[in-house]
Image 1: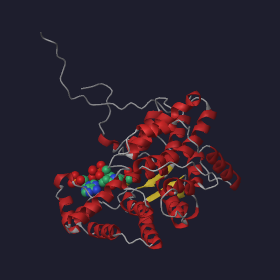
Image 2: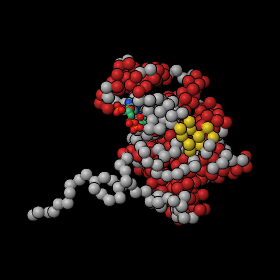
Image 3: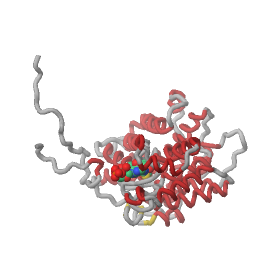
Image 4: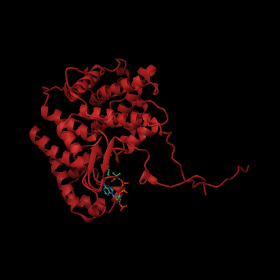
Length: 390
Ligand code: CMC
């Protein structure tokens, strides 16, 4: 028996690690609110930068505040020119998520004289640097992976337009800034912007609790997000759909395999620790997927396959009993694919969306006088005391 051990809680199913005023979720009702505002309203009526401001500073910005925030971000989009050696050094086969987290950590070395987390002005400027530069790193991770030249940011463009141009602006065919894509991507970023104490956000807070700076904490968050049970699920969903299509097996056969838990196969993009009802983000994404594909004139059989899979799963007792519904990742990949992103970029897009949440939660923890270094306990099950006997 160990002294001081109060509870064993694998996966933190019952333990709150913090108080937070950022995001509210009611998993039974399927409710998600940022700073009190329902996700549906924000997705309909605001932009990603407004939502980022809301999450980080607690209120929606006035027009003046928004324009100052936007201008500040535009002013900070350039990466240090020497960062090109970082991108030269990584293989083009590297996963863009690894390139993103490594790139962020590398980038922080250019700001070593302004990393002290005790200085509020440094926290402010690093907030802006992160928001401005992570999308640039992400676009370059994409370009590196397909062997194309990097473009410099064009600060006359909006946040999302700039990002799309950096990703697609030097394609051989004529590049057109499509407002349907801009709007759809802006909405998707809003839907991903925060989700209270999920694994990556908890990672950001835990790393931050040691006094580590915002770049290091967010870089750790990106790594936590990369796993297939978390943000990596959007990539895994597309791989799963493609596999079903290529194998020629029916959707029913695949679902039966999932139910038998054969080879640990799961229905990727289904289930959630918190939502025991339809994920409100998935509802919006599903509508958006059909609209975007239609407006772009893309006819992707994977969308039909996803719809068929959802229909079968929702009517099946296995999924009903376990209250498994599509989550945000189920339909996002189909949209990203239609936009032209390679599958390995999908989780990178999630990371850009989640960035304001990570920043807001890191800052909230920093300002909370009750924050302590995170240090879970364990229940020791190893050998009792023994001695070297030579
Ligand atoms: N397909 C088949 N069975 C599932 C699935 C699934 N996707 N998810 C959960 N189950 C089963 C699980 O096997 C278990 O069954 P049993 O009671 O017979 O052992 C039961 O449902 C409860 O699942 P759990 O693993 O205890 O649930 P959890 O809260 O620990 O895990 C989850 C949540 C999201 C990791 C899990 O549902 C999962 O692996 N889903 C697939 C991956 C995925 O889509 N992840 C994205 C999550 S949303 C985006 C984000 O914010 O990260």
